[in-house]
Structures are given as C-alpha cells and as structure tokens.
Length: 183
Image: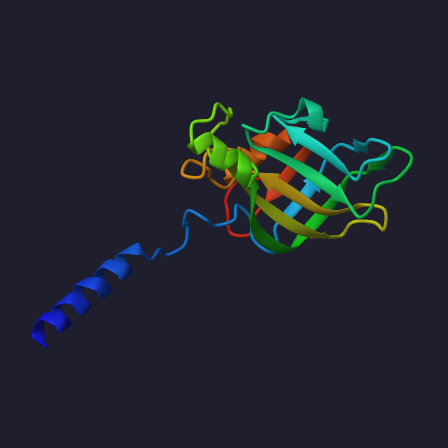
C-alpha cells in the first residue's frame, strides 16, 4: 500500500511538472481582441478567395515557400474579378490552432517502409495554422487571417510565433496584442 502511494505521488509530481503557466508550446500568437491594422491595400486575384503574405510581400500560392512561416487573408468566397482589401482595422473575434498535414497515401507509405523503391520524405510533414476570425471587415472584406508555421516533420513543426507573424506581415499589417508591448 505504501509503495502505491509513493508511486502515485511521484506520478502526480511528474505530471504537474509538465503543466505550463501560459506561454506554452501550443499557445496561439494572438488572443481574442487583438487588432490587425491593414496599412496598405491588398489585391485578391480573380477567381481566388485568398491573398498570401510572406516576408512582408504578397505572393501567390506557387511562389509561396511552405517551409517558412506565411499568412493569408481569406475571403468568404472567390470572385470572378480581382478585389481589393482596403486599409482597415480588424479585431480578432476567435482564435483556433489547427494542424495541417501532407502525408503519403497508405499504400505508398507501406511500399516505402517495405523498401520497394518508392521515394518519400518520410511519413509526411505538418504545419500548425493559427486561424483568426475577424470582426470589422466590410461585407466584401476578409473573413479570417490564417498564419502558418513552416511545414516540417512532425517532431520539428511549431506554431507561428508573434515575432514571426509580424515578420511575415511586414509593413503591411500592424499587430496590436492586448497586454503586449510594441506594435
């Protein structure tokens, strides 16, 4: 009986050491109430519902380096003509962290493991995406801002951090997080 109590105490102590007091690995870089001030208009190409940003510049999907952090403003629907997101202040209404993965189909994964000459980068790569639902957008404005950490093997993937997010958005978007210093 005494050994069980000692084992339980050690187990509980070990589990409590794993708890974090804020600032944890999977925390989102922004909170509800964060303000995103778009300082320069962004052009959404015709037929698309998003405009990508990386390194402070806009890019299309083909020009995106998914092995570096990136963000995109997501519209409600694609439009047949180009649209402009006008400068405005958006307030983050909700924040959610999601995992995106790119994996080989099961038959190819099994063939790779069996050494049958099927090429692969391993089981796949993942990225953590921070989805921010926006308030303050005009009816034709963006519904959300999505910021992604770099795609990487599962053990190396990490969510985007606030400083990375600011670097990705560059001089186009000012991020004001409640309770943080700086813009």
